[in-house]
Each structure stands twice: as structure tokens, then as C-alpha cells.
Image (tube, rainbow, N blue to C red):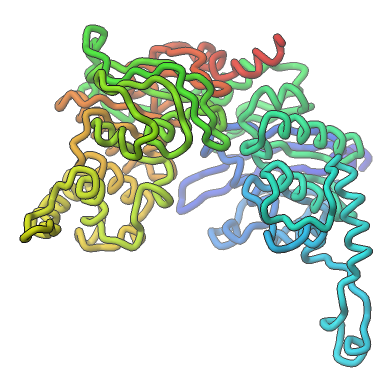
Amino acid sequence: MMEEQRYVLELQHISKEYSGNPVLQDVSLTVKKGQIYALMGENGAGKSTLMNILFGMPVIHSTGGFTGTIKISGEEVNFLSPHDAMEAGIGMVHQEFMLIPGFTIAENIKVGREDTLPTLPSRVFGPDLERLNRPKMNADARVALDNIGLDISEETKVAGLPVGYMQFVEIAREIDKKNIKLLVFDEPTAVLTESEADQLLKVMQSLAAKGIAIIFITHRLSEVMQVADYMTVLRDGELVASKAIADTSAVEIAELMVGRAIEKLVDDDKNTKVSTEQNEVALSVKDLYVDMPGETARGVTFEVKSGEIFGIGGLAGQGKVGIPNGLMGMFSSHGDVEIFGEKLNFTKLGNALSKGLAFVSEDRRGVGLLLEESIAHNIMFGAMTTKRDYLSNFGITKLLSAGRMNRHAKDMIKLLDIRCVGGGQRVGALSGGNQQKVCLASALTMKPRILVVSEPTRGIDIGAKKLIMEYLAHLRQEEGLTIIMISSELAELRSICDRIAIVSDGKIEDILAPDASDAQFGLAMSAAAQNSEVS
């Protein structure tokens, strides 16, 4: 019994399937009181599903539940909702803030657990008419804020606060819960400045010193090496390693995260790699800076040759996604960039498009698609607005050529096997994989000289993934298209790319051949942690 009580949390033999596809397979871990426990893994490794199971999220119960056992302080539990988990002393600090802008800091900290005082009407008509005990709420909030070193008035409205302050208010809300035993931090430093991130790590250590157990989900190896006591790496839903931080290194952790057999997503005969060394430079990037929250690029330099498939990889939050978004002018950027010898003007919106660079965004629903419009309209939209294609003269104006649009959309639907009822179907009704194919069709309709695809297979099934990857290989092999592919899936990059640049801490750490060893990729990915250890 005493041995059991050492553990605040025990997850035993946890497995989960979605529609017959295993996403977690026999995962077990134990977290001690006052321990900072790092949960590591690439996107799609199973971290979020494991936490959804721990918190009793509805998505788990509505999809058949899970197998395995959860114990809190030695006692088996079966959480049916996040409220059950909260009652048992488990809290979460989210990456996306769960705060109410119009409320004060104190009101946000106490929301759902407000202190009240009886009134005359409440004595007659019930507790719903009690009034808020603001002095007590403010006093409790002040204690929580002082515990994390946040020197700001508890009566300040949340609206307009810096991002870092919002993150600390989230933490204060959780530690105000009197029975808190375990806190889950989900990528808590992803949108913070360096100084804010350092302060947050100190707060985590302070909470652990008071006996609160912490599960720390992050991709930033330097942070893990700095504050964690123990770590577990998940890969493809399986537990591949659990080690004390003192017994491992950033390089080993990165290698464990990325090391897997290279998926045969593209058959060799469909992706014959030829030397592009003598080809002209399609894209030259020198000293590129991009101010994208959570994905900042800090002086990136590389060249891509015409006809090459050039990969950009790295762990989340290190800056790889910022590079294409900066080139397209989505975020404030500066540097020396040339597209086939023509200088890119960052101050001119759409300049990259006009020079032949088409972009398939990682945010297909937020940026890449008009969800309420038809498939055909989405496929044509970029070409119509930037190149004035698929328009016919009508007097002094131009009108959409519906016939040409529908014929082209029909051809693209067939070519990319977009599963739909026709070009008139609303894009928002399609599956994720088919939405991704529409994004690709839209980019190709612009007849680009360079195609940039960011996270092209995120959240789609293996069949759609294979089709998209094979088609990218076809575009390079048959049409000589230059392709830049940004992906969190290193195995995908290694299966199709000629060279792969690894981004770490906002800079390109190394450019490797796809058949370089796992250790070489791990070393490049963990460079930020290595540099911090040296300094």
C-alpha cells in the first residue's frame, strides 16, 4: 500500500482505437508526487489521446471508450467527464487559453467556484440569488498570483493582457483549486517569449517543490533537460522509452522520437531521384526572420534547386512552419529572398504568388479553404484572384467562366481522387483528407513554378496520405516542378525528399540526405538543447 501511495498517477496498459485503428497500444506510466514528468513524442504520437483518456473527455466515451486502468493516489478511478478529473485533484494548463476576456483576473481564477454571500432574496428564493463575495475571491486570487510570482492586480481585466500573463492566469486558476494533486501542462511555452518561458519553468519547479505532480507535454528538448525529472517517449501510439532525465540526453530523446522505419509512401519507380546539383537556383533564402507566434524563424538561410523536392523538418515550435508563412507574407518578415533570381518584396502583399510560388497552408480550414463555398470555387479562387484566370470578358467587366471552371474542377477531382458528390458540393462537408486534396488542387491550378506544401498529410488517413505523396513525386518527376515540403513527420520527408533541412530554435541546424542516420537527425533536432547545455 505504501508503494502505491508514492504515485499520484498510474496509467496501466492503456489502449485506444478509433474506427478500428489503434492510436494507443498498451501504454503504462507512473507519476510521483512532486515530480515533473515529461511526455514526449511527435505530432500524432498519442499524447493528446492519452490526456483525453485521463480527463474523461467525451470524445473518448463517444468512440467506444478505452481499455486499461487509471489510479489516482493508489485508488482506481473511472472519470466520465473532465469535472470528475477536477474533483479528483487533476488540472490542466492549456495551450489555447480558456479565459473570459471581459472578466477580471480574479473572476477568471474563481469561475465555476465563485465565493458567495447570502442575501435576503436568496434566503427566500434560493442560493441562485446570492451575491459574489468579491473581497474573498480577490484575496484567494492574490494568494494564487503571489505563488507564481505574477505582480499584477487581481482586479485587472483579462482582455488586452499580454499572452504570457494569460498563461500565468491559467496556472493561478488551477493552483487555486485546494485539492490539486496533478497538473498537466500542454505545450505551455509555445506562444511565450524567452523570458516568459523561463519564468514559467521556474513556476513549474516551484509547484513541484510544494508536492504537486506535473505532466509536461512539450517538443522543446532544452526545457525538458532543464526542469524534468523523468520522461516517456510515445511513437505511433506505443511507448518506446521511459527514463530518468539524469540517465539520458537531448540527442537520445530526439532519436527516440523520430527513429522509425521509413514508410514506403512512394514506390521507388514513382520517385526516381535525379541530381539537381547543376540546376539553376529556384529559391534563395538568406537571413530570413519571421515573427510568427510559436514558430519564429531567426535568420534562416538555404537554397533550393529547380526540380528538387526540398524538405523542412524539426520539432514543433522550432520555427519550421514560420518559414513558408513568412515567405507568403502571412506574418511580419524580413530577409533577402529571391525566386528564380527575382527579389521578393515583403511589403507587397501577394508578391510571392505573383512570382510563381504557390502555398498549401498547414491551416487548411482557417487559411486554405472557403468552407461555405463549393469545391469548384475553392479550386479556382486563387487563380481567379491573383492571375485573373477562368474569367471571360463581358463588356468592360470580367465574369467567371462557369463552364471552364466546372470542367477544370471535374478534371482535378478525378486526378486527385477527391471523394465528393460533385464540384458543387460545399467544401466544409468534406473529410479532412479530401479538403487537403482541394487545397492542393487550388495551388496547382495557379500553375506555380514552386509549390510549397506545409504539413500536407496532417490529420488524414493513410490512403489519402499515400495518394498525395505519390502525386507530389509525380509533379517533380513528370513536370519538373520544384517542391518544398514542410512536415512534422520526418519519415514522410525521408521517403520523398532529396534533401532535408532541420530547423532548431528558429535556425537551420543542418541539411541532411534522407538516408542519414537517426542519430544525425536526432542531433540536429536537439541542437537547441545542446547549445543551452554548452552555454
